[in-house]
Length: 330
Image 1 (cartoon, rainbow, N blue to C red):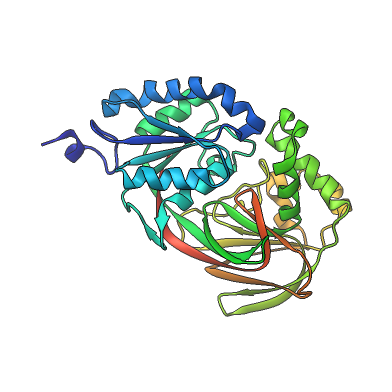
Image 2 (image 1 turned 45 degrees about the vertical axis):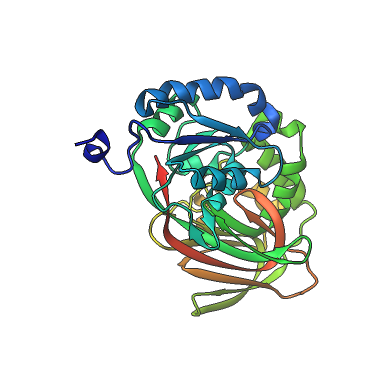
């Protein structure tokens, strides 16, 4: 009997193909300078298990991680390691699917945090330390987790659909993402500072727009939306504990809507969103749902969506849970 047959489900074994997809621009470009050391750390942990080195590829353009992931899975990869931040993970999970179907239903995703936010890894207590993360990539347990599917209006006006693994949201968070992803110097002070800095400065110029929110064909209400989060994971925005009750495998979104949010609210509730106590505010609505439809009352309003830390478009948008869609090594 082979070692693969006697091992725990989805354990790496001699002959397993592991591919690392790295984003050199992660963490404001710092990952590029660390890449050789990160790859050596991965090989130290994984090569003794698989009997071969990790196959590595680096992204050179937006959406490269999705393409490289799909190519690796078609080539027989058993495990993909996303090396970067939340945007890299987001692209990789989209590469697991083709025409709405998984390329390899048994393939596993693993994480090596090396980006600005690190919010998805935080939900699973995956450490930022490369050696510890590499050990999880090599020997961690595999957990089946949910994904979300969002349809939205892209910047060019076309309707687009993609998967998300952590949190998709709309409102202030979308504008903050646009600022974060184009900023340089704030990232020198880490993800938490970067998101906090741009959240405050963006809120100074933000007026919560009215949005009609429908959920599971049972809920239909109008909100002046500060930020509305449709969550699988618990954290976003560089450590903000947006959905502290979210479970990544319960087949439900945790929906958190912060209404009528102003910059004064952010100052008055300093730290609350990092502790998760913002749920106690009378301006916050929290519920669970399998689907959500968000419609701007003013059809000309540009209400940006945030999808796992990326801001690729705007409302109207629909959100649908996809239970048990991904195998994640934790």
